[in-house]
Image 1 (tube, rainbow, N blue to C red):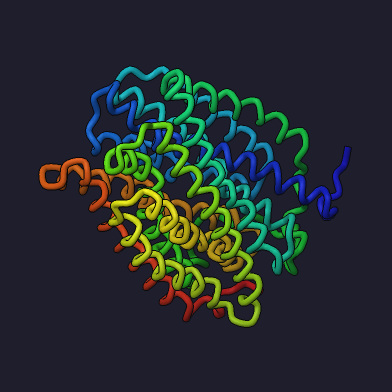
Image 2: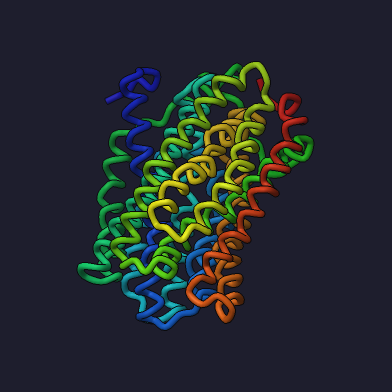
Length: 420
């Protein structure tokens, strides 16, 4: 049956199922954050090893394979690529539950990264062909709901299952569930005409990687945005991974209590901030393209004092409410920035340009952010004991300052680099 890819009802369904797939992407990516507590106790790991397993192990193949997979997505059926990716990363998540030592878990997380390399950049390109330019920031924001929803569900389900059964069973459950979603996605999502809402049309040939890099070399906004996003992701991914452990160590919560507290923060603050960023970009970006990066830069600057208030508070209730706002502000960049990345290149380059952006963002953000906070925490443990994570997180807010500076610098070039 042929689907009408411009039908509002069908586009809404496609967005829904894409959010479901992206939710599984982040459940499988972030579930180790809440399971870090029982994994550390069971396997006898250090915070540095946990950081390597949660960050670098995933990032190595996720970033390295993202570009060749995205080049394939600029030439071939994107729905098949996303289906295969979902199946692989879900299967490797289930395999994490079989690990009995650090290196087995490290290798299983490498496998999760291999699968997830094909999940995001093709989806960005797909969304850009389902929604016209003036709706893309909001569409990409809705797609990005998968980040707070998936992270929250991973933490909530992971914490619940680990508390009631064990951490291995949590990996089995979420992995198998993702495998079951894969055929539903493939059978119900149509491949839209490439560039159907864009002036250049769908028939332009896909360029080589060298041609894409050459074009991007003349777009300073792309590189400044990518480095700024990477700096923000060092803090963002670090927080997603370490905050559950922070609640356990600094507030004495049980694992399930920590999962409920942090999962609620992500759902409420994360969804509100993600939507607000995309709405404001579509609302204020048409007249001034620089607003696509100025809006998230202001949001990053506002997070710093709020995180200080939240993390230094000795009162759990105050910490909970104080974390809601900066959690949202820290995710407000997603819609505006992802939309800007789609618009600095022609339609036939979007998946590959997105993958280059994700390579920079995730190699630095995931690969370095989680382990950086873990190393800082280990070095502060002798002085602060269980509160070492509190001060490691405070040190990490400096990454948001760097991100804001780079985004503001990119705003001077974005209008010139924009492909109308």
